[in-house]
Image (cartoon, rainbow, N blue to C red; front, side):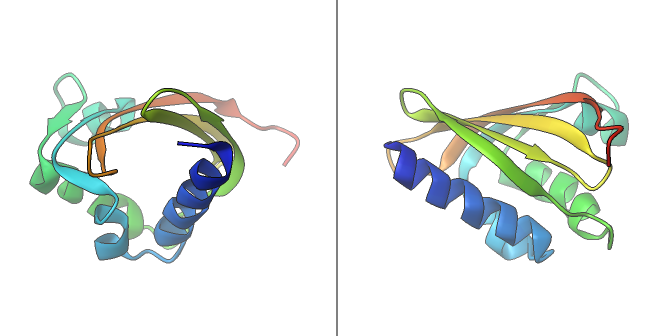
Length: 121
């Protein structure tokens, strides 16, 4: 994936979340998605690993139900069949979603990493 395509993907992904459109969000993910997030651990307990589109959909439904949910794209980094999407959430927290893609261009693995809130906002 080149940087232009990665930026388009990331912007569309952010826009889907900002629109609170769960179906649009889920269109980015493969059926066998594996998601790792400390927020998933907080929401559901366990180790924060969710497997399969149904489990990820349940998790993201919690987020899009929050009327304050808002992401601001900061940057996109490109790897091999992978990108890191850097954004700030509604609390000003810097987040890196590291996304790996399957052969169909869908996200098959994602790890979310969270920083501290931006105190300047």
